[in-house]
Image (cartoon, rainbow, N blue to C red; front, top):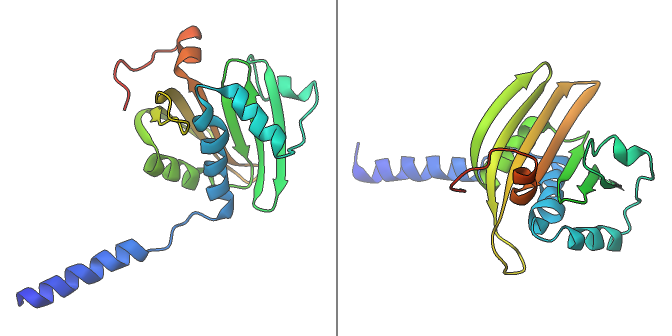
Length: 187
């Protein structure tokens, strides 16, 4: 083959890879976007996340329901009911933050998270219909402060009765306080 034909073939392959449609739809994009905006962008300032959420007018889930999604982390929870933006936001007093989206494809959300964040995978475990991946994450502070570090758990659920995705960030400080092993060197 001539060099020109090889270049054309390589260019065509690159174009196909570049323009290949993503499996992500609006529900997956919004789940990742919400997680970044409310959880990761506020690792060092969870009180600012509360102000942002309240400013958007999301309805707060009243007691006793927050006790269930927050497990042993007291805090607050809100729901978003927008089109393709159906998810729950949970934020604890110690900065643990979760986005749960029953309409997003959990596998696609995990793939997006892996591709779009600065992370290193710590483990992946499949338990029944749930797959949980745990990452060490470094996230730049959008306000110009120090980078935030967190342990992030991404769960995908694969039964029709329990489908969806869940993303939880545990800030480095909260992880250490909870006795979790944190990386010596963050990604």
